[in-house]
Length: 221
Image (cartoon, rainbow, N blue to C red; front, side):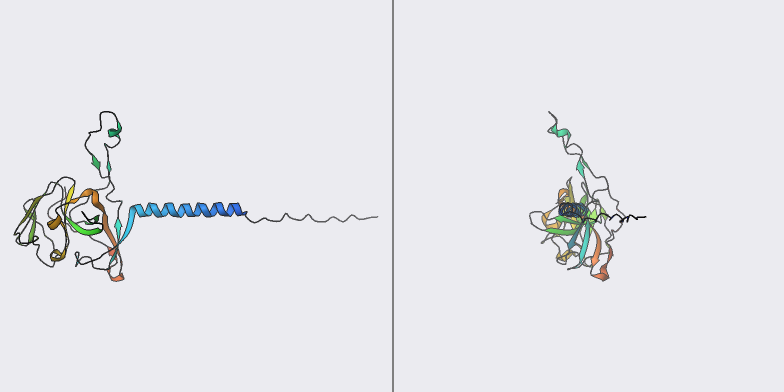
């Protein structure tokens, strides 16, 4: 009686990923990383403090993160100006979160300079800001600023600074008043120049933490 030998079937060999598939996955990964980078960059940006205009609050060589999303805004009338006869519609700027507030430390493109500055918001649009006798007054009320180490004086030989902040602008000052180029010398800051709010200090380690915003007896508009 004969026997027939049955050989087990060989499993098909597993083929490795094709070169084309590997290239496709690499391209997709690179695109994802770039998209994530630009999305995050659009919301948060790192910034190095240079100079001493914000002493003693922020120091030369300190690294911070700037929150760019918090001041996100848009012109509600921009699409309407595309319609016939609507080209002269005024701007209607909307801040979904909030516009810069008094006490915020903001990073901005310096007027008439190719660099970024960092200062504190003191006066808001429409407010009357006066500097006299070493103090800042907003709409007639003295601003209590415990973070200062020295009195506030005007630029040059002027005994008094007196200005009504135009619409669409801010009045900003450095915390180190004797060593700061700010609204006392170049008037007000256009809101459109603001990059974002100083948010977190991450280097050096002893200064790590959220950068606080003081509260004032004078409210924000």
